[in-house]
Amino acid sequence: MRIINQVTVAARALRDGKLVAFPTETVYGLGADATNSTAVARIYSTKGRPQTHPLIIHISSADSVSHWARNVPDYAIHLAKEFWPGPMTLILPRTDLAKDFVTGGQNNVGLRVPAQQTAQELMKNFEELGGMGIAAPSANRFGAVSPTSAEAVSEDLAKYLDSEDLVLDDGPCLVGIESTIIDCTGSAPKVLRPGALTVELIERALNIKIDKSSKSHRIKAPGLLETHYSPRAKILLDGIAVGGDGFLALARFPTPPGAIRLASPKTVDQYASELYAAFRNADKQGLTKVFVIAPEGNGLAEAIRDRLKKASSR
Ligand code: TXA
Ligand code: MG
Image 1 (tube, rainbow, N blue to C red):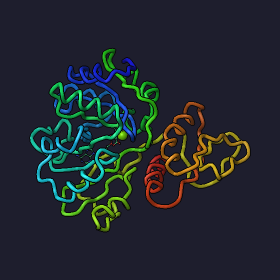
Image 2: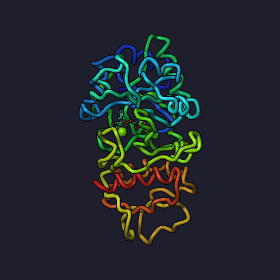
Image 3: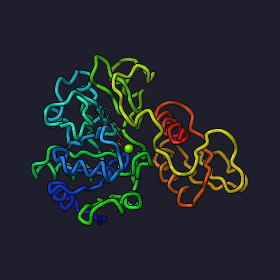
Image 4: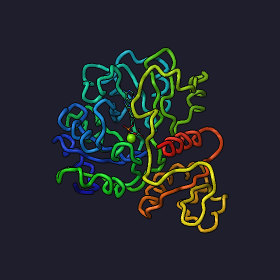
């Protein structure tokens, strides 16, 4: 594995069936040609991820949706126009191009148009070489914390990648938590995973109320409901840190005496962008416990609490 910053080299590697980890505004993805079964199989083995967990296919613009999805409902077209490129993944009925090896055998496909500039250039270059889409989960081992920098990808995956695989480096991710996943296979949208695109924004764009209860899900999305996004350190959302424990909270909360502060985000946006680096920092220091004060309110804070809850329920 090599860390590089030339997009054209990365696009050729994808065409040649190599794995390329790349930045998006949410987290780094571990990419492969979404039509190449051998390359996609290597995503699963590299991550240690079960075959039944579908992958998101990344495309450069909504113009490519029709290659991968059919029967796209009007509200999904509206969402795509409003929020792509951006931190949003739409689950849609698949076409024949989306094979079982990338959808985990589901009849749906997850599509995303990331906004991050290097990701955009990578997808455009890849499409110029004849590529149809880049399948990419977050570039971490299964169940672990998503990487928000090229170094984090390398720390997690270097020993599982081949010498010709690449990590395309473009610095830290701006948003820091994964995309909002919206099930668009029924008459109304359902949010399967809260993310940087908030439920409030979706409701305003479509002028509807979103049913937030997970019981109403049509789709079983493996990985969305279980424990996930966990560092090795135990994440505790109640109680008070004492000497030697990790501590994570907005800057306005003082560090308890003797606790090790992992981040001091001033805003909720900053909280999201620093969260996973803080988790990694805890593991690097070998901390066993991290006490976290979750941000309050709706919007992005809700998505952060979702990840904290999953991280703490391991
Ligand atoms: O921000 C993100 O979404 C990042 C960047 C790289 O795009 N990707 C990401 O992928 O977080 P991943 O695989 O780590 O998480 C995607 C989740 C998984 O839990 C997967 O099961 C679910 O989305 N998913 C993907 N395609 C799906 C489908 N067709 N139906 C249901 N769930 C799907
Ligand atoms: Mg993931």
